[in-house]
Length: 377
Ligand code: TXA
Ligand code: MG
Image 1 (cartoon, rainbow, N blue to C red):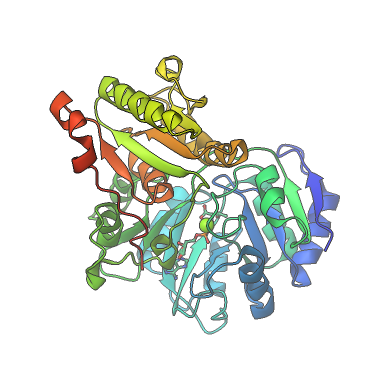
Image 2: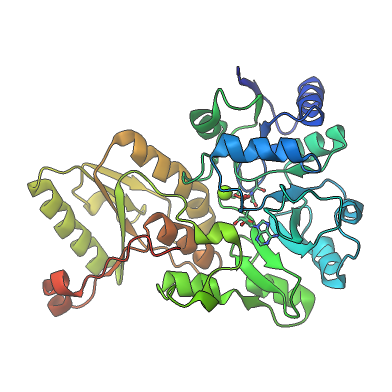
């Protein structure tokens, strides 16, 4: 299949192109489009065959449900018989925006779209191109991130092309996205609203609007601390169980005080170089100059978490292109979005995290290091 890529200015939307893309969606074809978080791979959510094509193009496991994208709040009534009161409150506060809600589905939503679940994920994106496409198509648009399964989510149309050219009908290219990591997912089907995937909208933001407790899925932190042997603590969102966002090179995160981290990474890089391996480092503006690796890239200023989120996937993809053998990255536990950023980065690293600590610990690094690879069932 020939994939058409149409460039478009978010501020001056090309209505003819939107019409062509909407026609494709209505006829059951796949169109990639920008959202404020990452690019999505869209299909008519109520057409099981169209949803099926998404799984095929991405190579996505069929039990990993899709997010349904809507352009008007009232479209919630097309996918559920009962809108939970909390959904209304959250929609008023955060839609259009990077928040996905899980609610009970009605009989109209095909099981292909929800990976066989009785619940459905829904969000109203903020990007003008996404909203124009959904509205013009008259459809609800099922859209996962527009990457091949297992690759970093696409933050530019070039990333979509690299993964999906020849497999989908069209890509609407409106340049780089604004946020760079996927939406926050909150599950409203339990008594207490539960975050299944951290994102730009934080727990504090949700709690302040709901005036009540919001939980974080224990399965998320269990994964991050490799406690996945206990069945009860598996992440609730199927997609959070897979090893996603994996760069080709082995990625290791190094945490600790900045000067210890720099010293440790330089030591590791020297070790790898002596073995004839090519090393890359993900640094910050503050530390970029002090590393001695083959490739050093800055993710942004240490305190600029929006820049860090926006650049993360682009940098992981760039390292794939550079063909390095190993990558070392600093950790970015920034106050607001740090949890969401580190969630993605830890996943990309297959939870390979190393603590650069005191001198004696660094010296005994060989024994102390514990790499937990691919723990996810
Ligand atoms: O920002 C985003 O959310 C982007 C843009 C395109 O909107 N989309 C996105 O979709 O990240 P995807 O498919 O890459 O991630 C959807 C996540 C998966 O982890 C999936 O398992 C989870 O949402 N999910 C979908 N429906 C669910 C449900 N009914 N219950 C629990 N988790 C669900
Ligand atoms: Mg995805």
